[in-house]
Length: 294
Image (cartoon, rainbow, N blue to C red; front, side):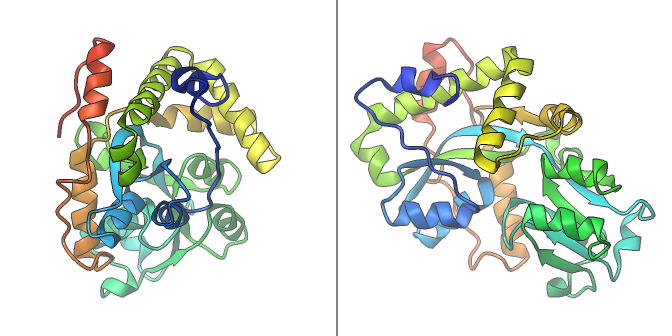
């Protein structure tokens, strides 16, 4: 959307877009709390964390962005959950979206993490470092988002033990959502509506222009990291992520309950006010698209 000018076109000349790149969702939330950031694409788990940390005051989810695109990749000799006993498995960050999914799945399959009474070592590790450690034999697997899951397979010689979408109804769960600072939403609902409109149009455009979108995404990756993804990686990883403006509220609520049960949230959160979807549904109605609901 930034690359093809869709956001600039939708927001108009009176709104300045100042894109920022963050290494982790927790950094985004810190910037939101400080008033240094008005809106961001973010994993659903740090969005929930920000909401809980601010006692429900500072963060609102106004749209979805992506579903799917996460998997548990392990060494080739590991073919069933029981074989993970005593193993070392990475997640991107303690309490993040993939970390919760990993810990919950381990618990459900009788091989819980050490923190939950088992003997699986869950090691929060940046995705790039996890790939290196997996290739070096220092990790037995990783629950990773795309394109890292694909890279763990293609470059690390692993295989997918669990595709996370197989664990959710209709294969859909929120991976990335669009949040705004609550004060910004209250003060500038017109700007938020344009932002949400740009997001919806971008999702629709990507669905209709898959190959061009894939090339633009890789171009952005190259600009940010100085290195584009190999064609084999982007060709495999890109279709694994479903772009959607639906924040899939039920999946966010389920993941939050899982985080609480795992001891990663201090309270069982009431997320009733986290979602502010009236603007999204107004945008969808204007484009003659079906509304989203819980």
